[in-house]
Image 1 (cartoon, rainbow over the protein chains, first blue to last red):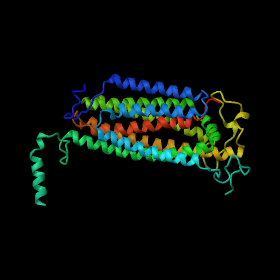
Image 2: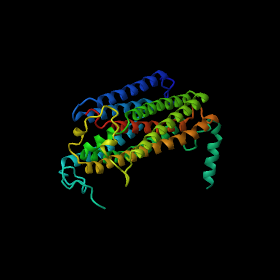
Image 3: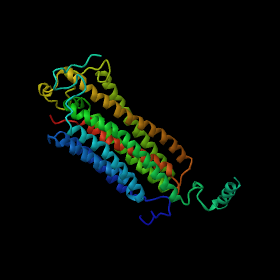
Image 4: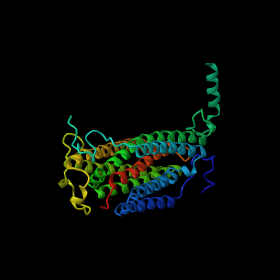
Amino acid sequence: MSDHASHSSGAGHVSPISLYITIFAALMVLTAVTVGAAFVDLGQFNFSVAMLIAGFKASLVVWYFMHVKYQSHLTKLTLATGMFFLAILLGMMLIDYTSKDFTAMPKGTDPTSEMGAPAAH
Amino acid sequence: MSSTVANADHGHAHAHAHHPALQHHFDTMAQQKEAAVIGMWVFLLTEILFFGGLFVAYMIYRIWYFDAFAEASRSLSLFWGGLNTAVLIGSSLTMAMAVRGAQTNKRKATVNWLILTMILGAVFLGVKVIEYADKFEHHHVPGPSFVWAAEHEAPAAGAAPAEHRQLSLTPEQLQQTTQLYFSLYFTMTGLHALHMIIGIGIMLVITWMAHKGRFDEQYFTPVEMAGLYWHFVDIVWIFLFPLLYLVERHT
């Protein structure tokens, strides 16, 4: 199978059907796991677990369904660059919002404030 | 000018040695495909960061108004959400099979897998219509007619006692903050659904091209690119499902 996927051939790597079925089954099982985990009280870790499972599922899709495993280093690097900037977008923003004292919530919606009623327009 | 013509003639003289789909500015089919794959991934990265902005907005409001997000999230149907997740994962499998059919030059299989993928995509959108209709019925659509009231909650999945759920937010605050959740819900799922509609449109064209025999095992780039797009849409949903449907189900 791997000889067939030499660079001179335009077809690229042809994955066996059994691999696709396995990935599909894994994705379905992980979906069931993430639903099940949501019903277990893990405290603050519920979110982390859900995101870890989703991240793993996404990796399976990217790696096998989207054939990144068989692509060039340049393609992999392109994807890694995007992940890097996504990490900056999410990470820096969350650091900012969780480390600073943003007690002033949008007007009239602060749940801790007595002025909780929606601001009149 | 004349040198351009001469070059074109020169290229043409060798053309019959090449695949007809090989464009003159590429040396080999592999190089041409590599360029397409990288180009597609660059596009998908812009899409990832596009949705990433929405995820940031979601994260911040979820941190600020977690109780409202948990409350509103529980009003979504886990059945429809779970079913759609399965349907979309299934459509990713059929899409991978369609690309495989193209790789192995099985025209009929490619067409059939593409059609099945489109059907699954349509099923997903159909379920979304049911869910959206339910939101309109319950006044859970942000805007002047938005109403958040405890009695509107379907106590489907073993709902917790109402007293417990209202500990931190007054009804007025819930009215305001659950609306934020539903604004994000409709923006994110709506944008995702729009991508699916575009994806189905692309697949209609690709299926027609495949049916006409435009592809072989040397050239099937459009099928593969449509596949990358469809899998990306699947990945977005893989994150949207736990973020929107599973905020806090255990209480």
